[in-house]
Length: 140
Ligand code: CMP
Image: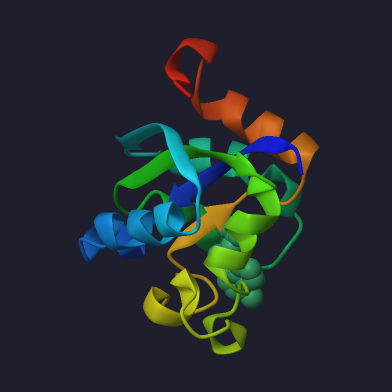
């Protein structure tokens, strides 16, 4: 399987509860390597650009406000099949449907405040990584 990179975001509900280390441990235990990471505060407009694909969805405004409600940790995870592996470790979007032991089953509060984001495909991973990081910041 090819080595890939994917964008991960630890969301405000998780940073507020001091869960960054516990979430990172799940990624690392699954064989994902954190090759870039920074804690930042987004504005609603910056979150809006990131989630532009959801612009027409009824929850778009709420999602942008939530993502700007506190610090987020943006990170790049690297590993064999990293995009699918990260989605496996995160669990289903709605924590009620997430498999036991996944990040969302263990930590997420609701479908909106669901602790983590992960890229869903190779093209979106490349775009999302480029939104937050320059090439010089990725240290494999
Ligand atoms: P994420 O993987 O970051 O991608 C889009 C986000 O939209 C998703 O996680 C959820 O946090 C959010 N989302 C999806 N469905 C809903 C919903 N029904 N209500 C509120 N937020 C949602």
